[in-house]
Length: 215
Image 1 (cartoon, rainbow, N blue to C red):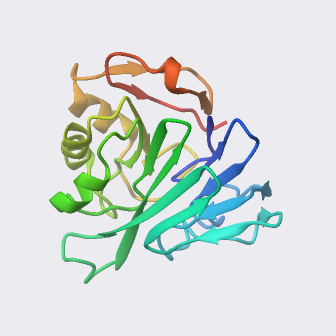
Image 2: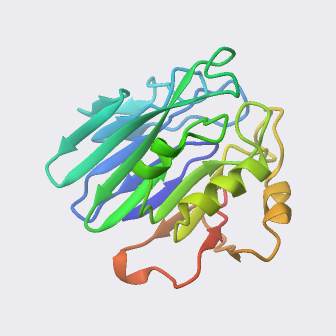
């Protein structure tokens, strides 16, 4: 699969068979410029403006925005209920964590998870290969909470998202706070591009953080 970061928490994943899966498209109110994107499936983790803007999503797509298992041939997408804050949704509502499983690879997009999830959630996230996780704090978990989740899940690749960039006007922490908190616990890769190509055979022995660039 090829994972392309479009900024903030928005990714488009292109599978070997050509199927495109778009996660959390945003609007243009906080610095990033929405792109017209053709997709086959669009996954929405929660109903906030920086995650659920469909006005630039093109094609005859299927929307997935509910809890439970959604199957599309060999593609299995599961929505798992979590919370957007530390008060079981009292301040920012629910959040869906989604897993995508195909060809022996399991990817997890954590949306705007706002607290360390319960053990039953971690059980569903076992054997995650690629973890897309927010690290900017304030509206989501912060750097230290993100690291606690990474330690519990133990993915092969960690891709940070939802952090402050020169483009974003959102009041959240920059990426370096997460990288500094991680210290030498994980290898860190700076490929200098906005995409990552991976299959089961190309996984590394040690967990690594892959820093994508918004291009």
